Length: 486
Ligand SMILES: Cc1cc2nc3c(=O)[nH]c(=O)nc-3n(C[C@H](O)[C@H](O)[C@H](O)COP(=O)(O)OP(=O)(O)OC[C@H]3O[C@@H](n4cnc5c(N)ncnc54)[C@H](O)[C@@H]3O)c2cc1C
Image 1 (tube, rainbow, N blue to C red):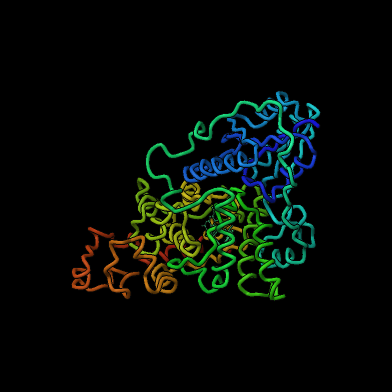
Image 2 (cartoon, helix red, strand yellow):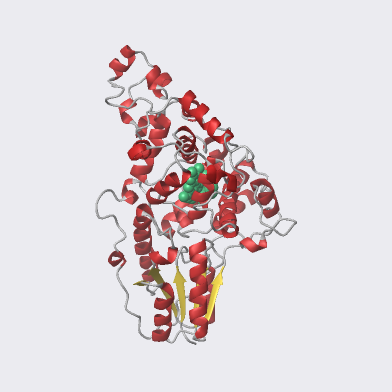
């Protein structure tokens, strides 16, 4: 049997990898290949933190393959060109991959498919990145769902395919001669200057780290998920997002792990903690389906009326920079932005508050925020990031209503009532009594002095007044009249 190439991209795992299993079942040698092709991603090539994660993940994948007597062939260049060359060199009869649903990636798959089929190679994509293929989940009119609740209700009626097993002896027959490969380090993915967010965030990229994270969460954190998931000072969520983004674990594996646990009680999916967690996997699914159906949304609002929104002037990007650097003077926003800088991740509740602050308090376009997150998040994901930003700005599918403007002080007091989160990421405010922690400007001079907090020197005063900013934002939204709900 001729060799089969498995083109690995955002499916950096061996288990529940439909393309890899299909290649193994052919019976010939299996050659796993990763190609670094940033141009193939269009305008959204991976940002700095994603590149760092990718480096560590590839190193882990290569080690796992070697443990099984196989290898990872690492190449750089235009994907179709590299795959054609490898297929010719190996005499490969098949090239398999798992489909992606971002616009650039989908176009690339078309190009690869055409180039390989011209050469008579069996070129095929499989579904491993989502619970369901987007064209298979449509509303009664045959169109895409644009509201989450009916989308998810519909999904819950569909059988979720179980994870795909890797056949025994998957890497059995050996290829006669392995093609030349680059080292992972040749791809220059790690930051040349500045912090590598992977060790500083305490992350473990790779399939083993992902499986450990899922196991630990299902055995422990899941029981408290409903209660703790909105508390940024607690370890209350799964932290699976970068693992899911890079496909070190698949959503069907997460689904099966939660289902196996809940099956003991016979209440799945009515067990509230399991159902709440799976609903978040559902938001991921919704985001990817939306991006598939509305491929321009990473840069264009889904609601067209919103493109006339009157953004504020931000001379020299001073306000944007203060937000990026965690110097807005609003502690919950600053804590989030600093957590992002240091660990490459930010808690979901704080992402919503920080995004709302940029768009509504500062009236700076959500595109600037989306770009910043894209470069700094280790879980930067075009579908989830686009949904999150358009939701926060009020211009996307099922978005927050325009008049919902998160009050950063109230949000801080509600979700970080003991101040653990702010104290961790904004340590200069640490000695302040908790009741002033989320609004230090309200503390009397004597309290600030005895806590050693210098407002305007050690920690900034608020860069905008909440009440005035809120009124200006509401006015700007109302100016879109005719499209009141933009
Ligand atoms: C402005 C903004 C930008 C965002 N950008 C991204 C991004 O680039 N990448 C990303 O993965 N998530 C993004 N999110 C969604 C969410 O914040 C993260 O998925 C979540 O914080 C990841 O932490 P976790 O794995 O512990 O989540 P958990 O609460 O444990 O959830 C489990 C999984 O469900 C998915 N999920 C959870 N919440 C959402 C959501 N709101 N939308 C889509 N999927 C979700 C994620 O894959 C996550 O890993 C963004 C949210 C906002 C408001």
